[in-house]
Length: 225
Image (cartoon, rainbow, N blue to C red):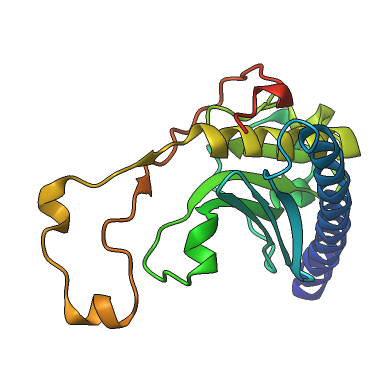
């Protein structure tokens, strides 16, 4: 009994991980194509605006644009959630115990200068999390600006169009999350350590995001280049 349970769960997790790897590869390709498309459209308008895809390794890639950086990360572990979380209480998940487990892909927003100047204390903000199951269906969680699909995971099959919408929406969320300068009182003093480490003490920071499951409608043309 123990062996059978272990075998079924291990086999399911391996299948889910393969699905997640394939989804990440698809996301990578979609992102590259989107960057080419947006660059082609923006260059005649303003040639100084750079939209760039940057590979990092098999489990991470970046998209840089308008002073922002989106970091897409494939998590190496398969996870599950409490019974009352997200898709867990649905009939779809309850019908097959293997659907209780997910691979996940995270999208974080940093300012591009945080990475460029290696400002180690600068925060990044989670924009969205993509959960992938054994059926190659997905559940998307994210900030209010994301085009969140209907929460019925049984209908959400991973497709290039769906992943493109995820990337577009993440870009919109990033550019709409403005930088806020710190109050003067917070930057009156600078330590020797900060000076030696070439930290920009007066640097602005993003306000962060509000998460919501409400579906929003916005087009990639809403990007504020």
